[in-house]
Length: 406
Image 1 (cartoon, rainbow, N blue to C red):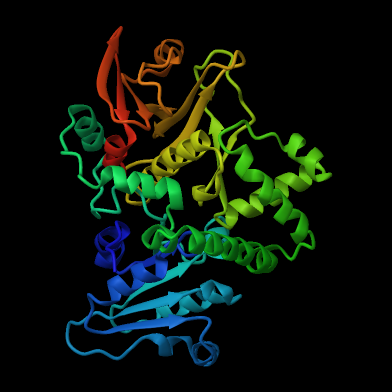
Image 2: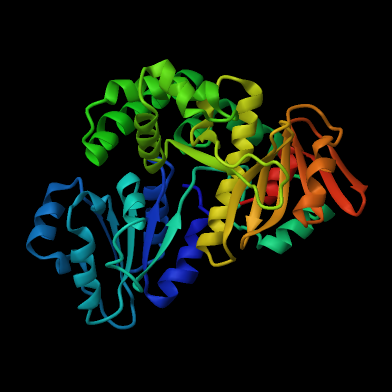
């Protein structure tokens, strides 16, 4: 059982203050494993899954019965897995939490509908901290700690950490099997293909049906079959609509559902202070990038996932507001990604499969950003810092550079 990065953050931020920890993330990314890791640390601990009929009956009759009896200073931990499938779960959990006679920690895990909840009702306001869990990254495959933002940036450019002997093997495994624990740790191509097919059917045929009640499941399956070929390119809803013979509003609605189900994520263009910037069309990436057929697009998707995971971890753990964008102007000059901290450009990141020379687009965008450093990630081994007009560009191999991110 592998230790996960979120475990200590949940202990330090939520449980230390007896807040409810809400953990959302894609199906089969390791949420239940995380819960069991935290349960092992407690003397008194209870795991309940909504799929268990006895628990559903117990919850319907008396939700407070989930809190175990304990003695002395021992603080119990209650894990409620998939409880969000119950329509009134927020109200009932609030009632249990507000009527506790002694401290008790709660961990609530879920996938799509828990994520949707975070956008809506505030019935647990002031009682919870929300965390977003990702499947494995290169760093988390070997160690659970995450560097703070400025420390990470300084360590990266100083090359403070010795490259792991297993880094290249880890990167190759991520590219071949994707980041989800089961196929990544098993590393069997045939079983990975079967797992991927089963997961897609589960997300669309069960989760999407429960979330939306829409009848167009077959057409959405057709859309998901086309999406891997569009990874990394500007995402045109009108073009996809023509291929599927669907309206743009329908494509937008289906895409939003697939975001809520953690099937894909979208990165938008950053336009502030960027001359003739794009403002509307984003780029789409898959959570399971092992399904992307093109090598260059799959590598870009892998880097996008590492950056998104890092930004969401830092945001959820109170380091600031971090997000990922990309840079592109109407003349088609582009930098693949831009990490933004508290509304200001912080670290632009370019991705190249094999080109170790700094992209000419650095000269175009660097003066507009206001930050002093940029990172160019390449698939092969490399490590060189180039400086021009006070702007540093680190060209680094992914196996080493991505090991600094969460």
